[in-house]
Image (cartoon, rainbow, N blue to C red):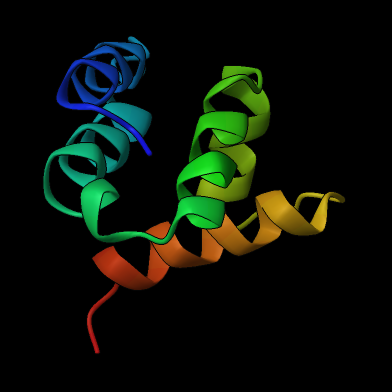
Length: 84
């Protein structure tokens, strides 16, 4: 289980310095992270360890991560921000 302190750290780590990533990650941590199940929270932490260029192409839907865990969390993030 992630504590409030852990979530504050994740919020800081979500600030990548690339606007396209920042506008996805920071609100996601603030508004959705706590509601994820433990496995998806762990997937998000794993995603944050990836290189910005990889994150960018995945979140702009130009490529799909090979790792199934990363595929899942990218889908969760994108579904949250895409209009229905």
